[in-house]
Image (cartoon, rainbow, N blue to C red; front, side, top):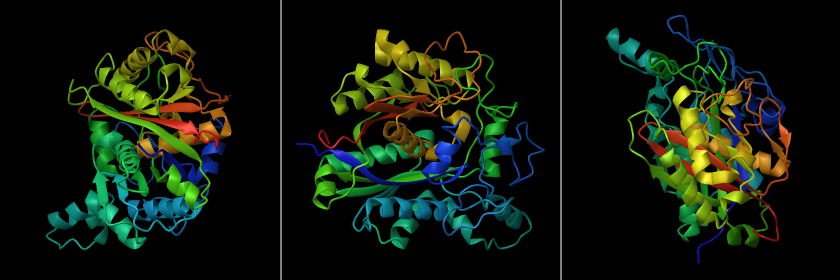
Amino acid sequence: MAADVVITGYGVFTAYGFGAQPLREGLFAGRSAFTPVTRFDSTPYHADRAATYEGDGPEIPGTPVKPGVTPGQAEVLRACALAALAMAQHDGAHAPVLLGTAGDHSANRGFWEDIAADRVPLDPRVLDSLPARLAERLGADLNLGQQRLAFVNACVASTNAIAHGAELISRGAADMVVAGGAYLVTEDVFAKFDSGKALSREGVVRPFAKGRMGLLQGDGAAVLVLESARHARERGAHILGKVAGWGMAADAHHVIQPHPRGEGMAAAAGVAIRRAGITPEQIGYVNAHGTGTPLNDVAETAALHRIFGPHAPQVPVSSTKSGTGHMLEATGAVEAVITLLALRDGVLPPTLNLHQADPDCDLDYVPNTARPADITHALSLNAAFGGVNAALVLKRAMEDSI
């Protein structure tokens, strides 16, 4: 019999600061985190804003940050993992480490400048551009399990890390896993998105809105401690929620564009909902991928209609990227924490900057203001280049049913 997968700890970091409370006081309060970019010179680019942490708000434990300095993924992941393990009241010994990351590229400019000047590159941060090194470094630093994997498939990477961890626990291959991901805004990735005309030139992100102009990037990292319910109960852990279902699917429609009818996303969500053993009507909230790009939001709306059928207009949906920015590989893990907060606090985060909806986006997107809601199940959706899609169903902790 498959084991139930529960959440016993988390650590989270966004441009609002370190921890859950900054998210409550920022995102849930209706405030976006976008500011002018100061980490690098943005004048060569069309866009000049991102949701970056510049030292305002709760600090990253052990990592001083000042304006113009990018914190390292390794340091932020360590802080998040320590917070998650402290909340879980466990040292994480023998727990596999599963991280969504494409590597830390904050030292790339210096590396190529050294090469161009015929200097030997000496910045040790260059090694962290290897994704696997970040998983290995975190595992070794905190004496976690020897299974240390990096998931690199773009914006579903940390969702896949959580799903893989849930699968390991469900089939009895692990009692506990440490899963999450990180992305911090760096110039090279910013420049790539800017050159692809994906970044909003108006300085805001307006998911599902008429005339929306694209996404903006954001800092993000989150680590969750997942356990089997039996293991958590045996050691007296406080259960925060349940990863009730997970699903992944690929539609292979286009190298960067989503399937216009959202077929892959709907398929991933269908698997997650069936695995959770519930009906679509039991989902009380959807944390959408919601990038604010013209193609994604229409495709995702179509996917939600496929998932929920006639019930779709009754399901609250929001895009929290309108506040946090798009955190790329970290997106799924951070949004899993946001979804968990929504379940536990009984408050749905808003879709900011939604003043006039696109006629092709015809659902309840919780516009501009958070909404109280007593819900038991929520769906978190993510998609990425290459047609890959991933979904998580989270369940509120209720001791009589977990």
